[in-house]
Image 1: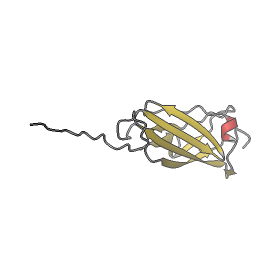
Image 2: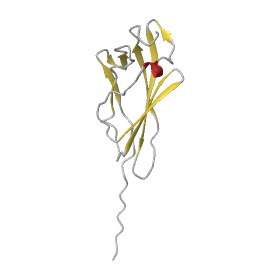
Image 3: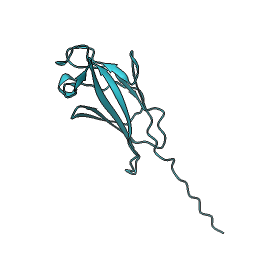
Image 4: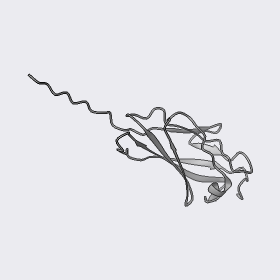
Length: 125
């Protein structure tokens, strides 16, 4: 007698937070180089994740970051990237997108957050 056992991997479920001293979904440019204080954390995402594909968009400019760890980190940004946005009342709207990939190359759906970026008069704003 033979028995077949099928094991299914849990689905890839992107979940993340964006935080800073300003709270959730808000960050600020902290110096003349354009570094910002956004902390991205995808540690609550689900599935057997090999790669966390992050895309941060300001205006028409994208900053792409691929990581093997979902834990908290602050992406390296500079004015050339951040200057692409449109300012409104000292703030720029930024979109942060996360897509997960497993070891077989399967991709999750995109999870997006809109983040308010306080310019603090840096990067030409």
